[in-house]
Length: 321
Image 1 (cartoon, rainbow, N blue to C red):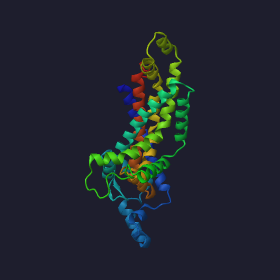
Image 2 (image 1 turned 60 degrees about the vertical axis):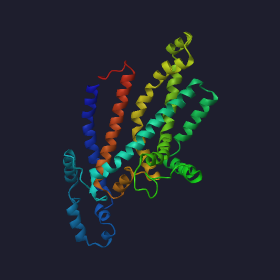
Image 3 (image 1 turned 90 degrees about the vertical axis):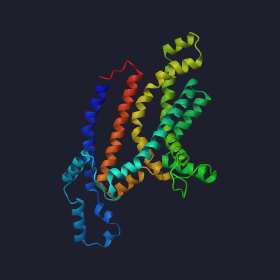
Image 4 (image 1 turned 60 degrees about the horizontal axis):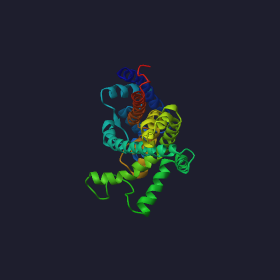
């Protein structure tokens, strides 16, 4: 296990280097001027000489390689640079927002796994039955629904029509204290919407995996020995049927990150979504690079965790292969 994790860490280094360089290259080719975005309305009337001096002060007049290398060497020392658009150190921008994004994504992902597994098992018990058809139809329907549309629908129904949940934000309007109760109530809608957007794949994978496992000889033998249906389903079919789901966990991380950004925007959740949008539209090189590295690292980590879980769940799979 440790050997495989070490190999993955080594292979992640060139990937992260390539990703950060790609961010700087794309930003350099962008028609947007980061200096004018930094200057705001003052940049509309400033002279070209003033803008050139500002470019020199910010270091954006340097060649692409120089800018990337300066950022990279600073990042290795813990200094991710200064965000041009946020007027703060990049580390501080991410630190203030990352925890809330992790809370939202983790809650939604766990909810999607639990609910998806439950619905998938129920559908697999009677393949072709009315419950199976209802669950799979729901899964295929949700698969086509974009997260922002689900978010707007949830706001309209639960916040505006029923008035049972807050429409957005982290705390109640006018509140100066961030309490656990307020955060929990404000987390319900965005977490559920993000979970529902991830739900179809877990439902369909579990349904297929458990359905195939129920047709295998060991499971049929367990039934022939007179074991209870619940024992056969949970003790034999579910374990075998969940193996493909473990690989799905890693592959869903990119979609989870994208969905979280959309959901955060709809519900005004104070995560990294706003910072990402601002960094992209303002061509904020340091913040863009740091956020991209963070997202890439999350994807690589998700794939590693999925492989480790698969190896632990199935002893036939070695960690050294």
